[in-house]
Amino acid sequence: MLKLTDKPVTAVATHIHWDHIGGHRYFPDFYAHADELDWLNGKFPLSIETIREMVVDRCDLPEGFCVSDYELFQGMPIKVLTDHNIIDIGGREIEVLHTPGHSPGHLCFWEKAGGYLFTGDLVYKDILFAYYPSTDPEVYLDSLEKVAALPVNSGF
Ligand SMILES: [Zn+2]
Image: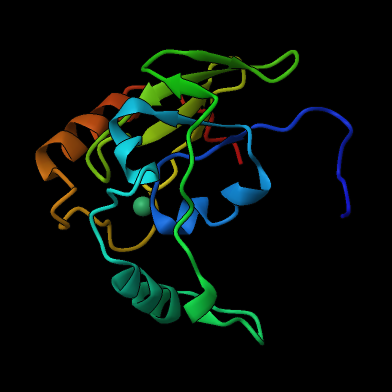
């Protein structure tokens, strides 16, 4: 297998939706928020058939990909994250922000020193998914207001 680095690698997904954890099996060291641990342990709120339909409908799949082989990743994180945890990635500190609404344990990652905010599925240019049974539009708005107050570097 091709390696990009000899340093330890830890996967930290913003949340445990199928389109964010599909590669977690390649990264056994991963972190997640406590509110989504059940989803990693057999209690994801959608059936595997529904998830496979979403994979086909929403993804640009590579040639030869067989959706019937797709399995939802299941496993336990090596660390359970909470709001305001700090992740040190070697000279850079990333603050974990619990931003529920899109999903109960959704996380954003904030590097205060550079003013960088990684928003995952909280903020993006498209239809915001806040209408599933596991979403909460009112909490979603609270999370948007939480990150909107940050002095984000918009100098791109
Ligand atoms: Zn999502």
